[in-house]
Length: 69
Length: 149
Image (cartoon, rainbow over all chains, first blue to last red; front, side, top):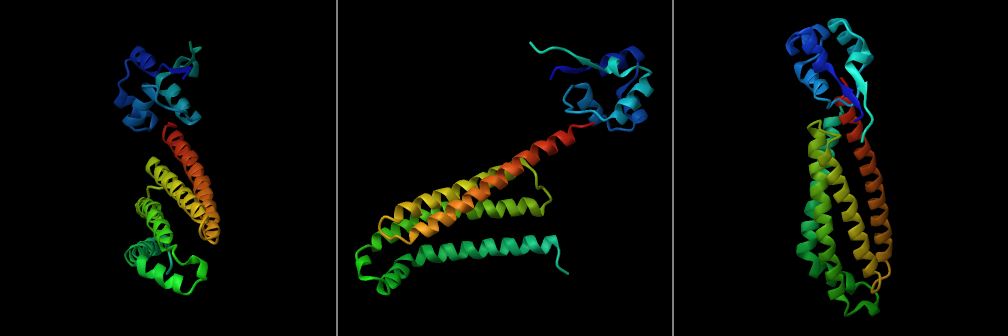
């Protein structure tokens, strides 16, 4: 998929552990893992909002559009 | 009080009843055909073997259809409705109906009324195919919904 989820990069920059982020945004670690590994088909605005709040970042820091080869 | 569980139970019972009927027909086919030919037109005399071919070859897709139908109902009873396995069962049901239709259509060469059974089976196969397409789409939507975080 040409939409890349850079959640792990932002988490590493903020030194945030998966368990802590999952708890802060109110989703399970399994779902957070789906997001981090790019297996997710879609993301709710409410989830994106919670992630941006918890990591103090912009949606553009989390999601990136990359042209497919 | 009538509910979904009882409804599935009734459907399963009907499938089992049809399975028993199929077994009964398979075992008593020679007598059934002889009895039918005794009461039928004279030009059917000597065609007993053709009727037996139709019945026994038709029993194969009928068995596949009934087994698939029973398994489909079993999964629905477990609450597993929109899963890939059910799409496979529906596909088998549809193709079994088409296979039955083909057998009946060929059988119409020696006994014309088989054509009505062929048309009914083909129509059932078509309905099964449409339901299969709906289920396949529903499975995709369910997958997408599960992967929406």
